[in-house]
Image (cartoon, rainbow over all chains, first blue to last red; front, side, top):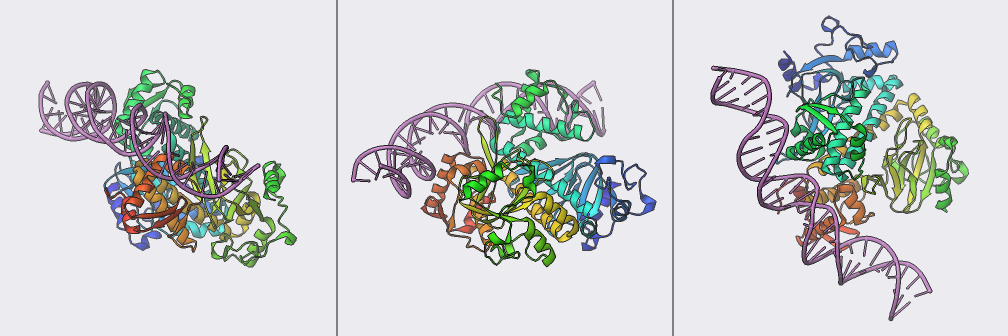
Length: 262
Length: 262
DNA sequence: GATATGCCTTGATCTGGATCAAGAGCATGG
DNA sequence: CCATGCTCTTGATCCAGATCAAGGCATATC
């Protein structure tokens, strides 16, 4: 079912900016989010907005499902919408002509991505798992932001947080060892899980080793070796390839921060 | 003369948020910028704003000089102000406990940095050359943004552009070779110079090799070797260590994008 | 103009992580 | 139950870039 709507999004003409087939009361999913469209609660972009603002957002948003491996948009596509994830995981990446790939970020429940005022997307976004997103047309969001400072303010806050994350990731890529990168990555996932109200420790990795490698600037083999070694050392438990239990968070954190741990 | 005001900034109490000793008509420098404080013209943050908005900004801004090697603020300091560069160059970096350093960005005339809503700076900012900055108290800027959508909109635009730059830099650090990194870095400086109305080719590098290395995730030696090789191959001219003339921009661009050039 | 002080460059060697190459699970499907 | 096709792990080598080690070559100081 998702397939067709995905295709519709991709082939969308500029008019797509404002149309949103699913954004009619009749098709709206039940939920307890501020606008009634999702169950994000306090994680929702519109949480705490004035009723009038929420109803304005409600009118322009649409909730869209994607399947794993679906492409939400591609680098260079006109940036017509912003996405907020209700469920599932998304990766965004840039490709080099020869196929080298850099995953610049992973996004999970509550995260927003796709901001690009009046330009094109700087990266491709692809669903890792089945995903539900709340899609907000950029132009409408912008119009609204001009009359509701709370909207603009929240956008700035989200972007500020993202910028800080990028500074950290640049440090990781520029100066950390393989071991430090993997430790930092896992702790980052754990922190983000906690911040959205999920347990920080038994983690389920929605992405494969290749995705992790392409995110932290390593190869699959090196990621695998680092994780195996953490397991051997008792810092992690790896009941299965996609399950990670952090046994010694402090030791792991020390490694992530650059302590000369073995 | 800058020394003392720098110190004053660093030791500033929370009250510093709103005080700005130099922001009085009496000490304002002559200039042709929108608010009369700088000569940034169209590069100015406040260019094109409504007169009322400009005068509001004018009241809270202050123009501050720094000398080379001065620290504007440190990672972890409360984020009380945003900076716009009028002249000179600034580097921002993060340090690891053992001294490893990652320069996450360089800023030049017209660039803005220091956004961090209600938090702490995520990085340290240090002048590379003598610098003149326009300093805007974050709180005041925020208040103004809530009443003047044009201000908020411009902040979002600046941040969007910065995010796109980060995606590129993450690709560079995660997946490019030493040669590709140096080529990309030099072309990036060239593009930015052109975008602020300066010639894109004979470039003056305000930063040393060590800074370049810490920005693109290499060592001084590797940066030096890459540049020497570009010179030997006729892609660059290096009349002195800090002067770079781009002889074959297209060839350099091909290398930067990952063409298997030699 | 001799001496110091910082880069910057260049050369020789070393090494962490890439690459190459098998296996080892572990689903899916017949 | 066994193929088929994954992805993940593990082992053996290789190599781009780091590290170690001298020199150049400016500008600054006295």
